[in-house]
Length: 306
Image (cartoon, rainbow, N blue to C red; front, side, top):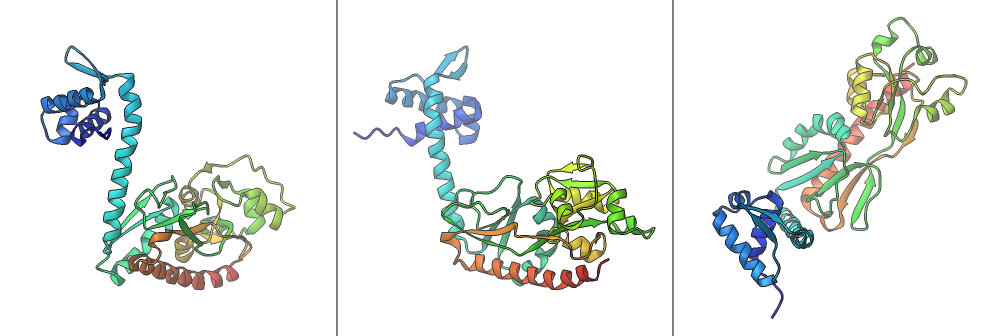
């Protein structure tokens, strides 16, 4: 006889372990607490192991239950992920996109109206979290990530070349100060996750400047550094891709023209099994076209800056 308990017993056990009580599990399963207790007793009889210690109408999991659920919980999570993945793959009208928070805020969201207009029948769902997504496990069709570390089941390509350069609010230039003078006078804003730090930019473009790089606010998200610079509170060292909306509007200006360090930091990643889906191809083509338009606009701007 296969050692397979009934699913009714296993689902009740998993629900109790996750929710912390028979009553809460009953609410989740839409059955009575008595029915949950009956299913747990059946599971215990099958296993020949006591899973819960019952004292004064309270049931606490035994050591055996905790160890057992470490495996059973993973199995249920795998079933749920596989089910969601299958359903999402069968839905050609739903596109699941994950993006790094700053890219989503600064670049993606302001342009999505164009994608909606071009593909009105496609249901787009966007999540933006600091933690990297795992497109193979997290029900993601497209992942736009800062960095290029992906597993073998993922196809990744850089979005574009970015330039990291000093940027500031035009209010800081109101008195006619420029370039090196501003860097010596104003607060330097640090983006701790940026691939280029102030020490590297200064060594390449302003080696004679002696600045105290231990001072100034430090942020682990670029949108915080960008917002601080837009408020006129200092000079940020940021990417032309992430600051494109602010360069376009004039909220930020480059202090040294096009003198920036080129990087390829943002990647478009797709699970290998999904790269040929129409919904993924539509999004990739749209994103590429938007990036090209942005590049055509920002390059002349940088060359004309002081």
